[in-house]
Length: 265
Image 1 (cartoon, rainbow, N blue to C red):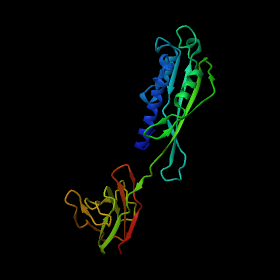
Image 2: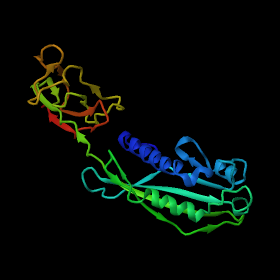
Image 3: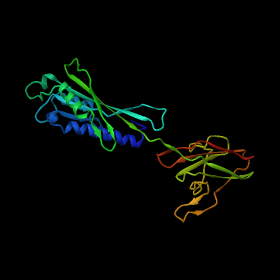
Image 4: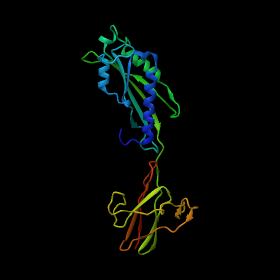
């Protein structure tokens, strides 16, 4: 789940909590162990529950394991693509224990059907999405365990990320220029050796504050001091023929600007 945008990670965790909560709080599962991958439960815990080492309500032999959702991009070409979230719920029983004395008596197919009824067409308030649930075919393993998987799907619309404004490079003289940006929360990096101006480039330099805090017309301002107009920082570009600059965001709600380039002489 690495490199997931923070807002999507929050939605995934909320979706997981809703699915787990609806199952855990349903009376049918009062004697069935409900495991949550998001809470650190692992397959070993599932096997332990089925082996009667974990008992719920005095019963044994049946367990539900709610896997963390994963996502696919439905429309990668569109602005703010739709993300399809899918979650698997494993309904597993060990029939010799589950259907015997002391077992829950709730079959894997019964658990799966109940989860479909709990989650299908369920609307998540706030996210404004609707869950769709479907039951898979039963599977019998060599050790006689029986499993039915429920697939729960929904989709989310991501807001498009806005770019930082393109830096403005203004030539002052054959040896100097100023660099400003209309995105007042951006940090500008520039180069004079024709290499790409990125923070990891040893040849790149950061434009000192407050020159990155500007009005919409590119004039620099100082915030917190009555928006007093100030002169942008003058950069020495002697012995340089080309200045390149990129504005980088100070937050996760924007992306870096396009490359700005200006010939000096």
